[in-house]
Image 1 (cartoon, rainbow, N blue to C red):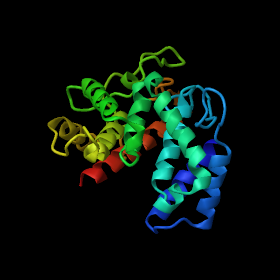
Image 2: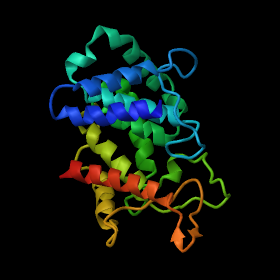
Image 3: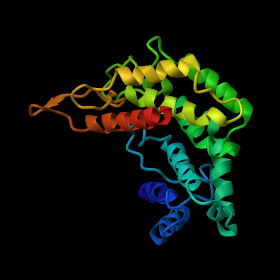
Length: 252
């Protein structure tokens, strides 16, 4: 099911430049809708993979997966979004994202801010204004954001303290979402000095040797294994780099 949503997102993003959906993309969207939950408290979402690892594979990751599905739908042509046969599924998705919003950690609510840039009905102006205030309150003195502070109830499995500094994942995601919501009611202007501080942090913290951005795992402290660092650390660095690049490209 996780792969069904990811496949739909990747393929719709590819087809967006073409202005029409290919047959494989239509099949992927149909598969995504066929696996959507239709009953119970999580109706409208997808039964996301749960290995008790944040930020993608934990108990609250159904919400993250639903946001990715919303991002996939945003990339489809208007004619597809207007199809009568998908309206019940669209309504379930929107209802879930709105109704579950208040109980989600700040990290997931920032994800929704990203999706609401092209699907404004997902957030009211009042909710957007309140969320922006919360986001600014978490900005660090150096201009960046820290991932663990966006999900403070989460603790590392090995009991070690969470990283406390600004990181590429949080700063990349936050600045990307802030830029995309510029035209939304109550959105952030491109010249906002707080946003510019965040973008400056990204520009100043790219790795000189790797070319990427780093983020410590929120699940455990990395350790040296057979003279090489635990390769799972790359998941966070890869994601941090992707968000940073998306944000900086948006700023150009």
